[in-house]
Amino acid sequence: MTMIVLHHCHETRSMRTLWLLHELDLEFSLRVRPFDRTLRDPEYLSLNPSGRVPALELNGEVLWESGAIAEVLCERFPEHGLGRPPGDIDRPDYLVWLHFAETISQHAAALTQQHIVLYEDAQRSAVIMKIEAARLRKCYAAIQGRLSTPVENRDYLLTSGFSAADVCVGQAVYMARHFAALDEFPEVARWYAQITEREAFQKSLPPPGAERLYERDFYPAWG
Image 1 (cartoon, rainbow, N blue to C red):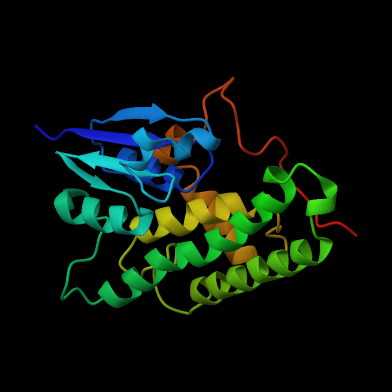
Image 2 (cartoon, rainbow, N blue to C red):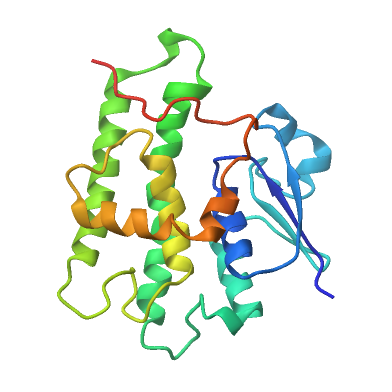
């Protein structure tokens, strides 16, 4: 029997692992942690030495980088077809888009710090807010270009259909939308609406009454 434990903070990168576990229909235990300094406690650092989430315990192994976790889970549980194995025609694109999620997430994380984590206005920067929001829009433009490619079945990032790449990039866009709107990117908006209707995504959202990272739907750049 597979033993899986996910250490998770609501509305963070670990949400993509949670979404993927639901897509794979796996049984697992969920340890929800506060998004605070307790992630630096020695007990948790033994699971994730960077003091971040996710950390995934998988049959005695501990994995702690979300892109690597996605690859490992899809390889170990291939029956749902969410990965693309070596030799698959979509394998290169799968890896590119799977890890592009982190490019989006680093800009969303910088904005999360500016708008939420830093409590003093003097520590915040209107310039950084504007630059990072512009970088998110450039990421949206890359997704828009991909989804606008004139080929059959461009409902998802890969021609061969829904994959973990959609999960990872979709969750990154979930975070990014708090700081940069999708209004100028209709194909991205259409794709995002489609994938977030999935039951597995809905299960990855914070439950009613849970402490959330984002208290507002949108945080505009200052000035």
